[in-house]
Length: 257
Image (cartoon, rainbow, N blue to C red; front, side):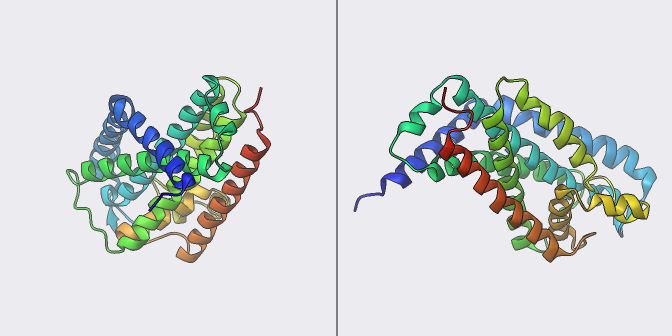
């Protein structure tokens, strides 16, 4: 029984991305682990002991979901933006464009690799969190689906960034000036219910708020926003960004010299 050529191509691109992640594991997996350990030590232990409870949980328990999701978002985004831009810079992305495979295969392969890196880093951070607090997962399906959707969204966003980037500095602008502020203002370290009404309402325009709170519900059973709304926002972003990524590939925007 023969395998469909598109599936072979998808597997090949995904495998290459995974091999890339594992080959340079000291750059892709170790730094997030060290960074998150420092977050747990500084914010969880030192500062958290003075803050007390938040949302009915110890501060350490409260920030675990946000820190795990933050690491997943940053690494999914960073993996695909650097990898695909590297393919553009080395001009071997042109080989993919002329190969007999549809755009969805190229997009899915790169996204799958980025999602897998996000999941690997998320799992590492969750294991690290177990050294600081007891990690419970009362809603495993919500936890897994939120992780997958969040990683997919920012993998797609990183792909769009890489398509439009003209130099390596361009792929650092969005994480520095957009992604990082949105992450810190997305309810990772606090409950938006503590904010004044204006800022609490403004926070609802931040998509990361919905991902963090859906994941927090999966781990702790509490959320600042309705769970159904969180899923609607996440699925909506996946659909829109997938469509945009496919359109960019079909038109060869920023890819064909």
